[in-house]
Length: 297
Image (cartoon, rainbow, N blue to C red; front, side):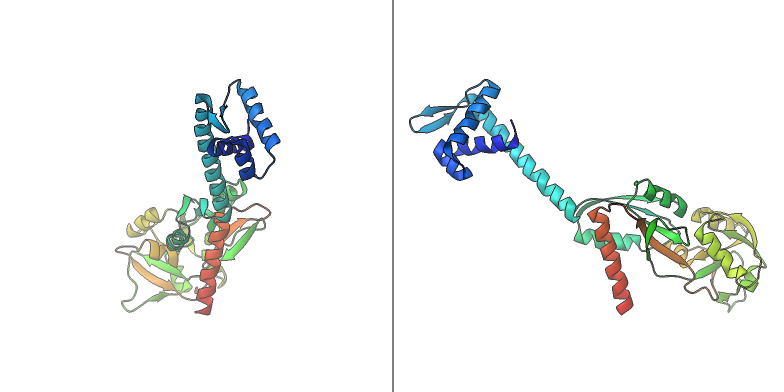
């Protein structure tokens, strides 16, 4: 017995006549009568008995009718949810984020939720290289990463660039608000990334572009530990503006690194030649709209 036959039986039960049910279903009477007999043969039960010109359901027929309604309702609901998922109104948005990459994700998700209140979320934090791996393994749909990276396998939407800041436990001159690379090489540095990754390379480029060699004594990608080390006098650090906004360093001294405006890069990436769920496509559209608004503004 299939969905089509259940729809036939619901029409018979509700119309009480084969002729009326056939008219409702826009089909001929004989095939509908044949379908009823086929269902009864399959079940080995009488489902409807003739009472004059009408059909009256047996106890078995009444049970089948009640269950048929539930099955059809469930099927219609399932189809509706599938269509909603196809438009991105429902479903799950799986996104990864490098906590050093960008601080706009919460506000983006809040705006996204207003438009798609029935979408659920999977948010995973990791370093940029691991997020690329998770995208390739189809664990995530999107990721916000720190650039530059080897992104030949990915589409990239570049986010607004940002400057770097120098953070130390000891103050510089009382009226000093910026730090030059030539000053930063005089103190031991803790780099908030791992060698070989984009952020590490970008920070080093502040010095190498000027033929300077920084005194890097430590790599630490955990922001809390990083600032604890700086507070203890272990060394100073250089971080993207995002980190300063996300976790303002208490009791530490923060200075803008000169000539780094726009040097800090991050981007939203997703895998090439791979089906992207509509939820993820809608998130990309939202991001593109916001970027366009910022450009026009």
